[in-house]
Image (cartoon, rainbow, N blue to C red):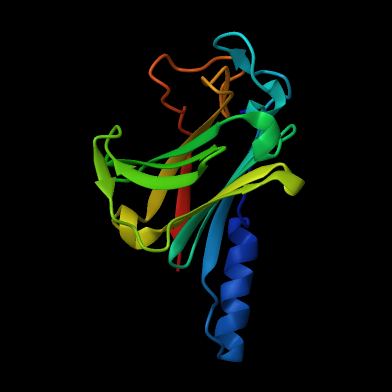
Length: 197
């Protein structure tokens, strides 16, 4: 798939590493699966007039499944500060092996920030200690940390993300679609992001 790269060791390299660890009598460290997907710059969809186009333009989506958490980073063309961008919304959609869906959302307005985890299609709020959503304007990034305990400790997840910006969500970008956004706002999901122990 163009623009997507999975970083996984080859079978031969992994087997050699296991043999070396066994020979030395050392415990193998837990490894994480990482997926990076690049999204074309400028493929933001205009929903209505006005708003900061570049604050919704996802250029890179990264997910990591390691230890007790899932981490997601959405790199944007230019994440303006709160005073310049109006509201900015980000949602990371996750599907677990049993088909359960979760969405971590972060919404920044001039009045502050709200971070929520939903189960299903936004119907049920999940109480999730440790959930984080950060708007890092200097790095043009929105970052999420989702404790695995809040999403049923899955062996893998499929994930995608959508970002919207403007006082009435004037622009939106799905990190895995070129210039298109699902009518219902559902992010397109990628391949399985595995957790390995």
